[in-house]
Length: 218
Ligand SMILES: Nc1ncnc2c1ncn2[C@@H]1O[C@H](COP(=O)(O)OP(=O)(O)OP(=O)(O)OP(=O)(O)OP(=O)(O)OC[C@H]2O[C@@H](n3cnc4c(N)ncnc43)[C@H](O)[C@@H]2O)[C@@H](O)[C@H]1O
Image (cartoon, rainbow, N blue to C red; front, side):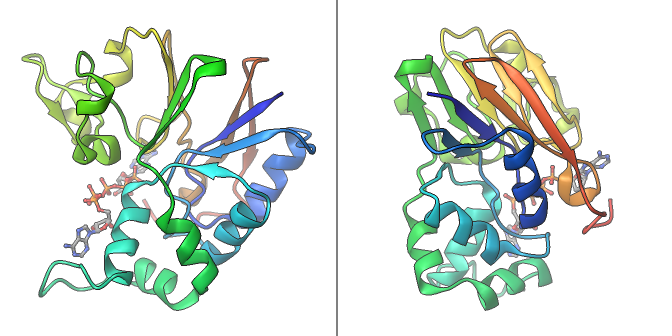
């Protein structure tokens, strides 16, 4: 069985369709979205509808978690909803929300000795003790070992991850595609006019399609 891991789609449904074609996606292939299905792009509802209708697996990203909090009435008091999140709240159906609510914060694929997570894993911390804060937001590890969501805080966490599992993640459009020995970062900035990227196992090959345009300014 092939497994197609796909980076941050962010509502770019046309690019998702194009990428599935480019990968020669066929019945029996497993598709795994590494989070941030929604927000910023033009068609969040279309992405979630495709995911649930085709039985795609997915992990929850920071934007998915954010809109789920608003949808559930748990947003922080006094905070304003951004337009890119308002658009998600206005367009997802009840079935879309039900699918979103099922998304886990990570997925384990023993057959591939691989994990999927949106942002990252703190090296040296057991999987069951990883905190959602970093599963959804991690980017860097400082020289003293402190995990951080800030790019400039230190080394990319993936460069310090020593396995044994291969971790496939997204979230870091500023760094773009990352290829470390035990970690693969797939956010190639589609919603900013970059590319949407898939990593396919077991063949170990990358596929990318260009964004039709930049939907969000940098
Ligand atoms: N209480 C609250 N009330 C209201 N809203 C709340 C809230 N709590 C959270 N939110 C909002 O909810 C969302 C999630 O919050 P949160 O999870 O807290 O994320 P954040 O740290 O605020 O947002 P980031 O901008 O770091 O994350 P991202 O996932 O957008 O990263 P990306 O790599 O695409 O982009 C990161 C940056 O990099 C830039 N960038 C991307 N690619 C490139 C590139 N190639 N070159 C240069 N810059 C780039 C982008 O423009 C972007 O600025 C945010 O919009 C946040 O503001």
